[in-house]
Length: 241
DNA sequence: AAGTTTCG
DNA sequence: GACA
Image 1 (cartoon, rainbow, N blue to C red):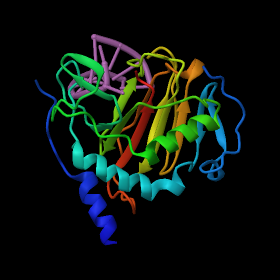
Image 2 (cartoon, helix red, strand yellow):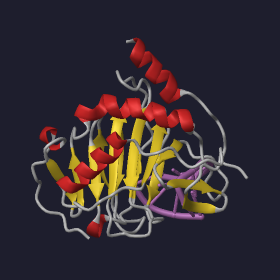
Image 3 (cartoon, helix red, strand yellow):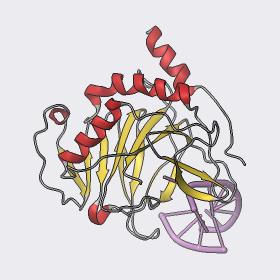
Image 4 (tube, protein in one colour):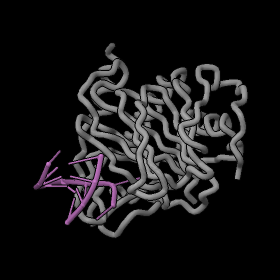
């Protein structure tokens, strides 16, 4: 109880600081640590949803997230157009995704502190690698984890992940806390869009022919989750460098 | 534009 | 949802 309350404070704690100044997927394998709770389902060719894949590790992940946030706070980055994103972000791992008026890119250092991004917790890396391996990306080694916090109304409009160097490596997206509607489109912004609800513990992996598909998140609906309070947390793992 | 606003 |  008290533990949950503390987590909610830390997850929701505000730091309104603008950013100035492969492998071919195969059928599901039986992993040893993570895959028992889920059966991969294909959303489109190359994109898989592993329902509840992170459920067994949720407490560990949220605990380790606190360690990351103690070193690098949430911040609302700016789009190249100069507007603030509604989603609050942080990074861990060797590389962190940043956006500001200069554009999108990966950096080794947090622009807010000048320090390197916090290390990627072993629990994060293990989960991401296990999820990727489950759908056939056995060699996936993430060097970047973008951490997104959605509060009520926060959203991410349709976009492509294309700031990474090697598109043969997949994207692994972990959902924690409140549910949200995930949009999955095609290779052009104007292509039709599938939508699916992502719940606490769900993991989405996309690569191969799906790697550059547009995707996004609809505005978060108000709600309360026992572990995260009024927010949704998303961990997005990439091999960026 | 990883955006907001406006119109059906 | 489709446009600007």
